[in-house]
Amino acid sequence: MFDGDGPPVETIYHNVGWMQSEDGRWWYHEQDGGYVQQNWQESEGEWYFFDEYGFLETDAYIRWGKNIYYVDKDGRMITEGCAPDGRQVQEDGSLKWPDPA
Image (cartoon, rainbow, N blue to C red; front, side):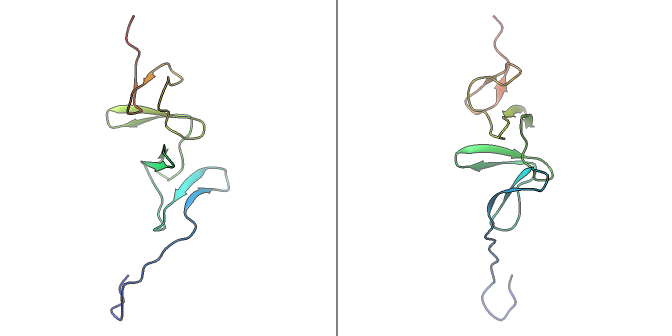
């Protein structure tokens, strides 16, 4: 914010990172005071998806563009192995159906 009488004032929020709501759902508080909504967030090398309200998705399939991803019970995108429905995880984390035998 610029008031015209000096340098711009920058507000920095100190409560940054993972926050838990009273009902137990998780969200990620950004340094600028905002939070991630309907998007992915990388944290410590893991990818997480947040819904339209900014809450962490858990144990869910996420459709992103033409791909589908799976996030586990802790909200982390799985990056190897298979999703619960049997689909294989590709290098980018997206799922594909197993090749027919």
